[in-house]
Image 1 (tube, one colour):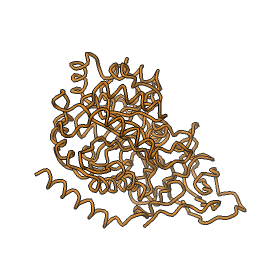
Image 2: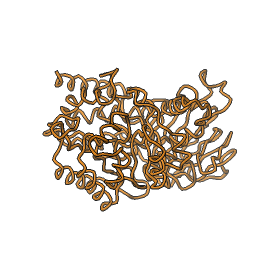
Image 3: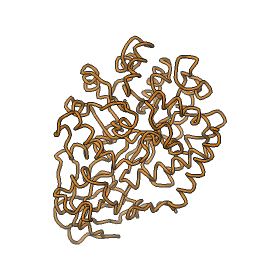
Image 4: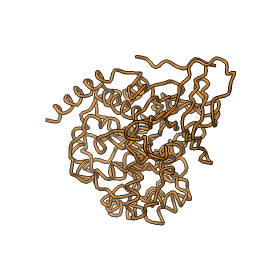
Amino acid sequence: MAVQPPAAGRRTVIENAAIATVDAAGTEYPRGHVVLLGDTVESVGDGPAPTGLADVARRIDGEGHLLTPGLVNTHHHFYQWLTRGLAQDDILFDWLVALYPTWARIDADLVHAAALGSAAALLTSGCTTASDHHYVFPRGGGDVLGATVEAVRELGLRFTALRGSMDRGRKDGGLPPDHAVEDTDDILAASEAAVDRWHDPSFGSMLRVALAPCSPFSVSTELMSRTAELARRKGVRLHTHGSETAEEEEFCRQLFGMGPTDYFESTGWLGPDVWMAHCVHMNDSDLAKFAETGTGVAHCPSSNARLGAGIARVPDMLAAGVPVGLGVDGAASNESGQLGTELRNALLINRLHGRPDALTARQVLRLGTMGGATVLGRADEIGSIEPGKLADLALWRIDGLLHSTVADPVAALVLGALPPLTALFVNGRQVVDHDRLTTADETALARTCARAARTLAARRD
């Protein structure tokens, strides 16, 4: 079914909920209200909503609930929804070599199905905004980026489409098979066309575009430099993988004579318009350069653990002033595909540094909301519950068996099991109702994804 927009000038009132606004002061209300006016937040505060409100279309009793900003996903690979559960015990490089041949056989129809599955998993775990890094464009595969854009539009997810790329195949010392990479000039032309076709920089935009060469081991230095120039000329952001594994560090030193951060600096890839995925293997000098330039980080704790990549220095990043958000990463290296579960995993994994206070529950909630909004360049629109911001909200039920005895509502969300999601609003539209999508039939969606996965698997054989 189609997502119906909120009626202009009509109000939705949510009352009696615990509210974590995640504003700059960290304001919380143990029993407060939020008033939505169309697609924006009109007011938020303690106690019941103001009396005498006109044009109230709906009132929601938030008793027993925690209301937070919608979660923001800063790194994903939607197409990998069709290749979950493979190469289960490999490090990154071996995992990539095992899966590249299959990914090189995707097409627009398969990507559309995969994007539906990935977006559904995000929405039903409290995510209202996501970025997707798509970098595999098989010859004859059709409009795969357009297929992703259409899928998220159908489900109602706020979206940043990352036009990725690879031009360094095996013959040039890269990891991808040669038939899976594109020509450098073709990539740049397609990247500019994607920006012109889809990027909407306006306030409240549901669709933006960023440029995202895949990684140092799959992309030429020429493409990195020219993409940075193109993105800045077009006014869009830049994204890539960086410092994910020890093997990547060694690759960069052998090929470029320097570590990943210095390499990125040499190609124009540090700055407030840039964010990197993972950033696990970074020294103090690397962190200082990210902090000085405002370069952001997409922290993907579950994927880093799945691939044995290591533990990113997130507490040190935050202390240095590095912008950090959370990411799911590809569903083939984080089979849950959920962003909500990354809150708990980020907190627990970062405490494995040996510091039980390395990250607090509220710091992690901020990573998943305002942190992600900042990394995506949308901190003035999303990431906190404040008047004038977009109505992207998650209403979590915390009075059930698994949460009713957790003393702190934020701890119930971050330290406990992922709570039931009573409602999720994107742009003022309710797209999840009691853990179920309002915009698609989940049973039919599961069948569609399973068929697509079988089709792709057959192409691999």
